[in-house]
Amino acid sequence: MTADGPIAIIAGSGQLPIQLVKHLEETGQNYRVLAFRGFAAPELRRHAHATADLLDLKTIMGVLEGWRPRAVSLVGAVRRPGFSALLGAYSLLRNMQEVKEVIARGDDQVLRGAVMLLEERGHRVVGAHELAPGLVAPPTLTGKLDPQEDDRQAISVGLDLLHSLSAFDIGQAAIVAREHVLAVEGPEGTDGMLRRVKGLRQSWFGLRRRKEGGVLIKAAKRGQDLRVDMPTIGPRTVVEAAQAGLSGVAIGAGSTLVLDQEKSLATADRLGLFLVAVDLPWMEPHRD
Amino acid sequence: MTADGPIAIIAGSGQLPIQLVKHLEETGQNYRVLAFRGFAAPELRRHAHATADLLDLKTIMGVLEGWRPRAVSLVGAVRRPGFSALLGAYSLLRNMQEVKEVIARGDDQVLRGAVMLLEERGHRVVGAHELAPGLVAPPTLTGKLDPQEDDRQAISVGLDLLHSLSAFDIGQAAIVAREHVLAVEGPEGTDGMLRRVKGLRQSWFGLRRRKEGGVLIKAAKRGQDLRVDMPTIGPRTVVEAAQAGLSGVAIGAGSTLVLDQEKSLATADRLGLFLVAVDLPWMEPHRD
Image (cartoon, rainbow over all chains, first blue to last red; front, side, top):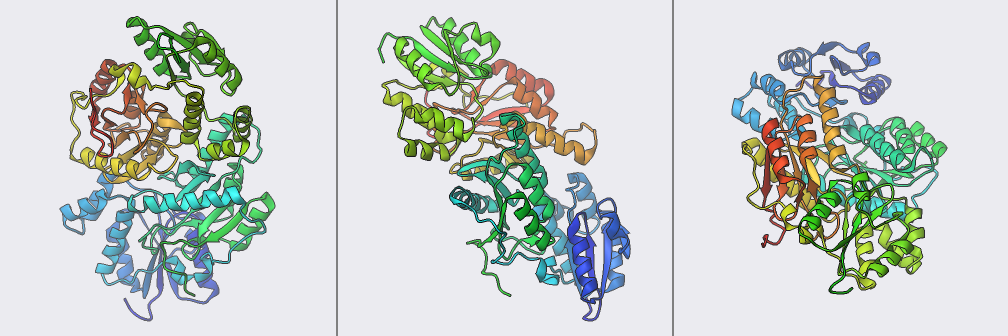
């Protein structure tokens, strides 16, 4: 780590790395992008200074050693590799038994393991929210529509549910209609879960597209390290929520990233959904 | 209710009503079947003494009044109808606001509402487990294979998870690999959840069919009324679990129904899966 080195962006798939790089570019910051082969979007690869396979830790560590970055950020999604592939990759670097235990704990722990590895080598790991605070949902975020009574009940049940699930290695989102939980997010991701609910409703109600109600609630877990896998939504999430017949989307204030806030809110308004940030009782109050 | 009346079986879809009727037939008991149109299997409809639409409570109550049954059992699956359809049906019988509140609480409460309605009219509601105790998984249930260390860890995490979810109106099953939760069952049901995990794994690992591990854990909730929606598995569940690449199935002893236990165990043995009953710390010990 050197105070005048670049910011190193280790980039997986999706829009987040793109928007983060755009922000760093616009604010004139010194950065380098290491793109994961097979994950990073084509338009990001144009900005990439290096590429590596997800599990090629030797190359990744070598590239970082050359850059001497002042901070490293892991952004964008990667699919969980198979257990034995992970084991092989990590075992190049660490005690076998310890690695096995870290991996066995699941996604959260694998990501924390990656942060641990980076920190052990002297890197400072930061979250996208620290590099681009403008991407974080402020407590005041809201579209033109407000949640109705049924929706407020669903949000309350959803937050209780996500809080109860904090101890488990499972998703950060759920879909709730009044008190009825329609889905808990697993490794299929938020979009996958929304399509599942859309499918359920089609098989129940035929192809009628009337709004059935229900709310997507997405929030960081109690105790979550926001430097990795921070909950993220964007305009596409809002479109998928509308297609699943939901009445709106609620996200944790101060701990959720919103890609293209203006477009996300405009999309919600246009499709007749509410989009609001809500305080999470289990998180530190948001500080600006 | 009359002591010498028949047992009334109100039958939805699936194998459970069929096996229950078979049991009542074999043990020479006096019974009547009311089949739900569009749900009950064709082979059950041959045994049906009456049919009704799911929401036609007037017909259902009228039929039961005629039969004067000594006990009523609600068995087999029905899809959750739309909110307004339920509201319409229940409001024929009860105070509108009260009905709205019961329905808003979700599946569990709708079923409890049905039990409540039947009991108010003087019917004794019993579970399939009371009519055919032989269908209940005994604590000794096990196939030829035993869960390995990873599986035992997954079972422990899965039981903790289901216990944490008891307070919420959501499924009775989850799929866990070591400490990593792959899925929580929602309204799509156990088979739907298993197919989802199968799909996830195919997209992660291509079409290779090697066993990835993971356990289906299915158990009654803390405080669950076993007279309705008792957790049920059967040979098909075991086949779907194998296709999802799981290493086995664990079910709550004394509070899970196993359709065709012999065939379920033989299927598990043949496909190389374990199938075991485990004690649920939050249930009363099983009494025979």
